[in-house]
Amino acid sequence: MSDKEQLQIDDQKQMIQRIRVFSPSLYKKIRFVVQNNHLEGWNPTEKEINDLVHSKPDLSEDYYEIFGVNK
Image (tube, rainbow, N blue to C red):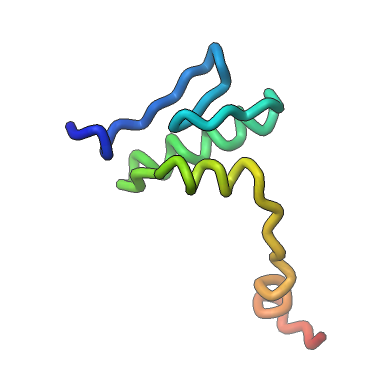
């Protein structure tokens, strides 16, 4: 397995792919999602993990599309 395919998780430091997650509850959630998707073939980069940890996505467009609500 190459380094790109290795999933790096450190429970002691709460780090995933060398990105520190300070909130224990957020760490557990992200770890669960990352591990499950890794089993399906996703090889997350540091940037992708960082985006998961620090971004606050605007899901309003998805909401409007799913529920057929016009703005």
